[in-house]
View 1 (spheres, rainbow, N blue to C red):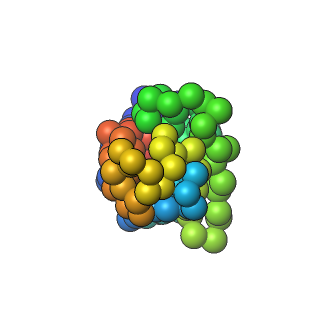
View 2 (cartoon, rainbow, N blue to C red):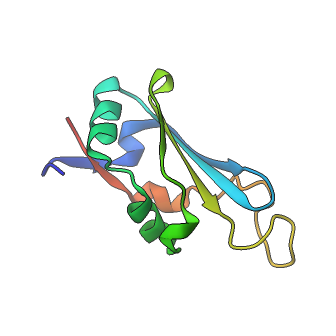
Length: 109
């Protein structure tokens, strides 16, 4: 990674989480600029290890990031700690699970 970094919140138009069935959540990050997206993809600055650390979960519970070039987006699936709708589960729709990403800093072009 380069020495120049910026918060994800300044680099992406969309940072969201959503339901991906009863056992998984999906995280989507859609970058503002093509250069930023290309750098993150090329350096694999968003990877399973980083996401697992941010979410304090085993790496095996994080899918490989999927980079989607036409949208300048990256998608990552996470295993839910509790099945959707189970007793103790706090976010059935998974719409409030993107919080740990907001502290992420990424290299800038």
